[in-house]
Every structure is written in structure tokens, then in C-alpha cells.
Image 1 (cartoon, helix red, strand yellow):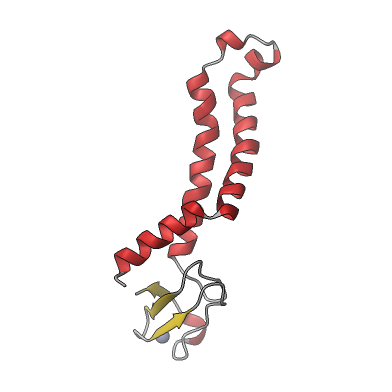
Image 2 (cartoon, helix red, strand yellow):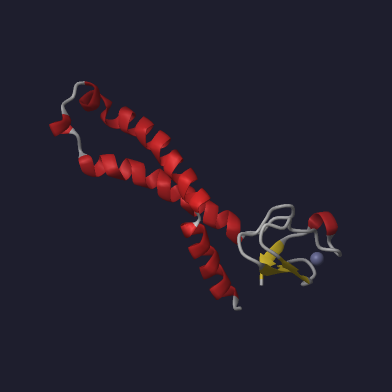
Length: 123
Ligand SMILES: [Zn+2]
């Protein structure tokens, strides 16, 4: 599997993952509500709903949702020692080019050569 195909699969798997979606949804609910209260709280509290900018209202929820989802994708694309992968992958050590295959939900090992200085990339 090419690196690009693998990264595309990670992107799709992360986007479709129920846990990632739930977490992004909760963050959007909390952060979006707080920001809407800060930005348009006067209109909401005084029930002047006709004065609310609904485009900004919706956007205020969508942005934290997509930031959270983007963060999850970024974490899954940059494997760290001790972390876990959401799909199996062959990792290549940036220091010595050694490769290791890691299964889904298995802790990512150190490179047997580089030990504590291990930095993996997806092959
Ligand atoms: Zn190494």
C-alpha cells in the first residue's frame, strides 16, 4: 500500500470513527455554546431571536467540530512510541530507516536501534 493511499485510509477511518465523531460533537457543543453566548449572548438572553446572525451561530458550532476532527486525523497520521494505530501500518524509523509492522490497537514499539530517540513515519 502506498503512503498516500495509507494516509487517505487513515483520513477516512478517522472521519468515520464513532469515538472521534462523539468527541468532536461534545467539544462543538460546549465550545460552540460558550462562544455563541460570548458573541450573541445579549440577543439569546433577551430572546431577540430575529437579531441573531444564524450563519455565525451555526459556524460557531462547526469550527470546533472540524478543529477537533482535524486534530484526531493529525494524531493518527503521526505515530508516536506507545501510541496506537487505528489501522495496521508499516512504520519506518526516521533515524535509521528500519521498518516495523504494527497492528491496529497495538502499542507502537521503539525502534530496536534508536531506542528513546525513535521517530516513526508511515511508510
Ligand atoms: Zn531507528
